Length: 254
Image 1 (cartoon, rainbow, N blue to C red):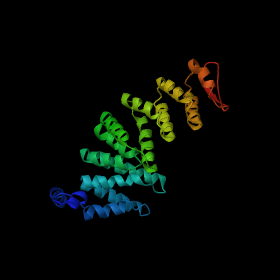
Image 2: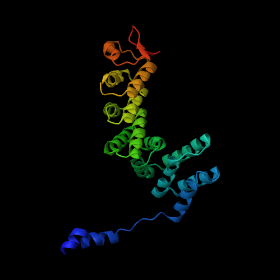
Image 3: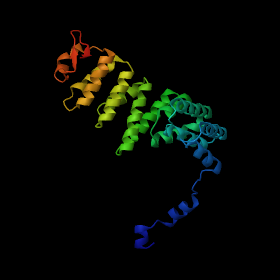
Image 4: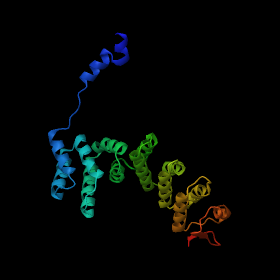
């Protein structure tokens, strides 16, 4: 092979491999049903029919198409919830067939709530937590869309009272992105574990922390009524005027 071939071209083996690897196309049936499913301005009956027919096909390709329903909302809130619940039920019924499509979706799309819920039902909490932490851990989150996806995935972790989740949330509470820190703190608070209180206070008194984050933490401590008397003096140095601490160490809003 000549110099320019080596510089700009691929070798014969690579070219042969590429030629022998077919590009998989979506079947006409799946493409037609997907188009109906994704038409947010179409009739609800047509979308539901497409959902049911894709579930009848029952292939990986069909599961991939079903997941697209989670990527948009329709104006009718009840109808939107019913359709997504229907897709969820079908994905769970498909069992292992749905797993890889769900993981691909979580790796690439926003709106992880329903897919995560389906994955949890199919493979259980332990495996779901492993998958979620692997996905979040592998994200670079450079662009806004990726950051938003990471934010939503972190928010979903509050559903799992798992040691690895709590450990991960500790780290996310120190993330350089403020929105991710806020969501991590909210997730920890939703778990209702008072042992997490000191972690929240660590963030609260950190001199580099933002005012928005401090207000979020204080609001959560007010809501939970967790006592912070043992760190009262530290908190007084950073607490804004809109909050105060009573004698027993409970933070309150003015």
